[in-house]
Figure 1 (cartoon, one colour):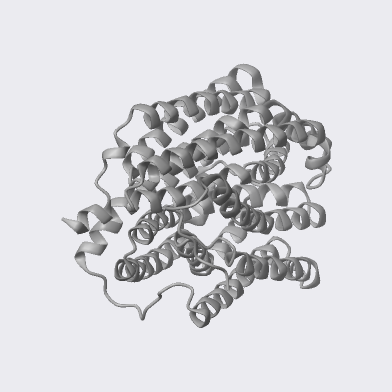
Figure 2 (tube, rainbow, N blue to C red):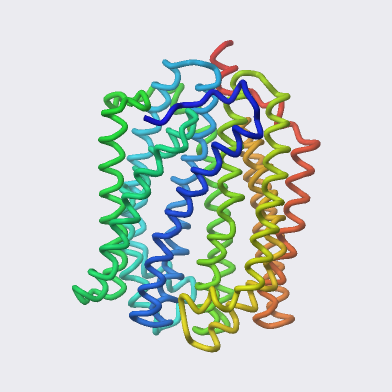
Length: 449
């Protein structure tokens, strides 16, 4: 059984490294869902099918993002309860999150299934990709409860300092997906639909395995679901609504940028889709560090140890720069090879490779946002991070991408996004340095009064 960890004492650099690498590996395995789908779809069906999967995945993430934001709120609230040493508080808020997130996952799944076609039309999906994108999107909405069920279990374990056990669940899902993808796509002749079915069956299996495992091992204090108190619902929504809107702002911004990409035609959409698969891999270290910083800082904020919070942030900042600069150099050298793993259309490959080479050394700036936002989010500054995300995507990233794409054509897409990464990281630093996030009244402190 993996041990839970108390991050309020001990050597922080070693703790951050030890806690972050299993998160990185788990995130890598999770990304492999989409990578495996993309490899099979792109090679067995073609570039149009890959573009359809990329477009529908963007919409899916947009609709699901509010529940993802609730997971961020859960990490903050539960890690603070862990740092405070409140077993009863951990149980109560855990129950409240289970009830609220289950209801929201089911509701969003139904709405997303019904709205799939009009949303894809709004996005400007090319006609040749529309039927494939609609079917892929609808099938994924059917499995929303499975997706967020096992993701929530992972969040709960990380909030109490266990980042290794979730690897078992994610590994199970990836193994299932790897076996089922070619079977459903080619063996059963289901094409793009087969890739979607393989993904949700794999996620459902991982959720069932994870839930049974942690119940038998008693890794977290799950109880029989009951109606949460008004106080618990209020506390969760106070952080959960802005946290969910943070993710909605991000994913809506990604969808808006996708509309700029789609205006250049199917080849650019396919090349961008392949580039985004590699982009999702490059950002994994920064995302893992941001999650680790959030959990570790949350425990120390709950315990009132602010000196350790500052040191956690500094170590996260340093680890991010080292990892992201190294990965950027590798990406520049092997961009063409990476894109050809997914597609072989010459025009699409050329765009995807050029995009990655132009944006590679802007990635460390984006990583800075993950670290700094992870720290202030741990204090409960959800609304403030929401404002920073609005600035990042709707004041900077989308306008700059649209503007520079208009000036320089398809090459302006990478340039606009890269410049926005740099400016938004400066905004995040200014709030971290001068903002009032340290004085936010946390849930633990409210319960004491």
